[in-house]
Every structure is written in C-alpha cells, then in structure tokens.
Length: 368
Ligand SMILES: Cc1ncc(COP(=O)(O)O)c(C=O)c1O
Image 1 (spheres, rainbow, N blue to C red):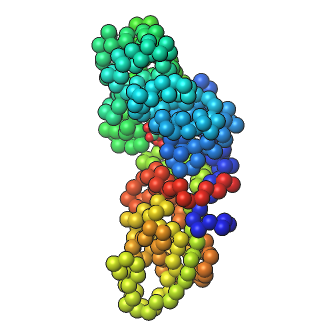
Image 2: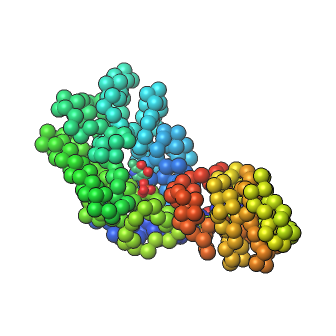
Image 3: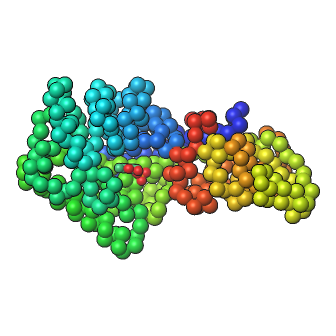
C-alpha cells in the first residue's frame, strides 16, 4: 500500500520468471534482444533491462534515439539498437552513444556514407528488410549495386539484418500462409547475401507472436516485447505459464450517498435510478486512464467489481459502490487481481500495449 493517489506495482519476480521461461523454450543458439521501447511499455526500461541482464541478456532495442541516449546516460551497457527513424543531424550522436541505427530505406545510404567519410567514422547499422508489413525496410529485391552499397561499404558496419512479421498473431489460414511467405522472403534475402559473399550480421524475425506461435522460425535472436510482461495481444499459443508483471491502483477519495435522479460528473450522462452510494477515485485521463471507459468500465474495490459511472475527469472518476463496503482511502484496483489488464483492454476496445503505454509519468511506479 502506497501514499500515492495513483500507483503501479511492478513485480520484478514475475518478470524474471517470464524471462527465464522464455530462455528455457528457446533453441540453444537463439538469444533475447530485449525490446524496451516506450519505457518498456510503461514498466520501466532500465529497471526491466537490469533484470534481463541478471539473466544474461545483453542486447536491447528501443524505437527512438532519444530513448537510447537516455538509457546510455542512465548507464545501460550492452548493444542497443534503434528500430526507427533517426534524423541525419543525429547520426553522429548515435555513433557517440554507441547506438546501432536501423537502415529503414535505401535513401539513407549515400548520405550516411558521405557523413561517415567526412567524420572518419563507421556507422553501426542493422538493415531492416520489408517482407510484407510495408511499414519501413528496404525492398528485398533491390538491385545488386544497391545491395553492394549497403553490405560492401567500408563506412558501414552491418551488425544485423532483420525483418518483422505483421500477421503472426492470428491462426486464420490466410494469416498463417502470409506469415510463412514473410519468412520465406526473409530467408531468400539472407541466402542472396550469402551467395554474394556478404555478411548479414545477426538475424532476427520474431516478436512475441512469432516466438509463441512459430517456434520453428529459428534465428540468432528473438525480439520479445509484451510476452515478457505477462499479457497477451492477439491470438497466441501459451508455451509456458507467463505471469502478469503490472497492477494499477488508485484510492477512494470520498464516498457519498445520492438520491434518485441525481446526475454525476460532467454533462450528467449518468443519472441515479435510485438511492446510490458513489465513490470518487483518484485517477483520471490525466493519468492515462482511458476516457472512453466513461459509463462503461469497471474497477475492483474490496474484492468486488464495480462500474464506472459518469464521465471520467482528468484527475478523478466515480464508481457505484452501492453494494460494497467501501470507505475513504480504500484501494481501487484499476487492473490486477479480479480484473486483468487484458479485460480492461477488451472493454476499452484496444490492445493492452496501448493501455500500458498511456499510463503516464505522474503515476508512481513501485517495484516489488
Ligand atoms: C520491430 C519490432 N520488433 C519487436 C517488437 C516487440 O513486439 P511485441 O511486443 O509484439 O513482442 C516491436 C513492437 O512493436 C517491433 O516494432
């Protein structure tokens, strides 16, 4: 129990359990590249990385250079890959902070080479290959001369070649077929490199859905994000028992009794049908709680699931506690025991990733 009005409990042991569980099911030659972007989906990037490091994981990845530099400044050791865009004015900064950049399109190459020559450096890069997601990545069928400009370039140090599956979290036959097509395209590209005598560097294809649903896709690394946090996105086969890592709590600030036909919160979109006991909770959309759960979502108070009534405000929201023994300073579980984050995401018509990424800075993180 915390003094905070709104706080997250993050269970280190459950996270460690999930990491060890993954290590046990991976083939001997496959290592973990920890995806710790977006503050590791709100769980704490460095805190989670440290636990992974204790388990022998030394390779990490984030989405932005800002995240990478912040991690380096806070002392993260090990390899660190940026998956997304890095502005050309920041390429040297990436080099200084020992950060690997992703080559997301061929257009980058000429300028990167030029800058590397001018500054007398070799940029560490990984090549992203677009095998069908059509988000970022080079065309695997790019001409031989362009291939040479990437893989036979003294100004670039190619650390790896990777791709990303976009339909691996569905067992629908057309999705399974497409996923195999992506893998085949990736393999063919790796073979093309081999035939030309180019080194691909480290290889990796699977994020959590690929790891869980396609264990036969074996490469040097896997890129787990959500699976180590114990929640689920899409359809996945459970290959070991994963434990939830995060639970979210707020407090009961006051309890009042309202007579029939009283409106609650902005706009009075909820009105009492009879005398009701209402609790005001210390959480709102200013903490990242989804406002779309107004009049729709639930929380758990003293073991009972109770409905949110009226519009969610920036810093408070109200719940109907007519049938619960409830008083000021009681704890309300926003997700955790009795109401999982998976259920909350379903009720919000979104994925858990979005829920946990939206929980913002002012919510205290307590590491158990
Ligand atoms: C390229 C890449 N790899 C790995 C991941 C981790 O994904 P997941 O959380 O599904 O494991 C992401 C997340 O979006 C990603 O963009």
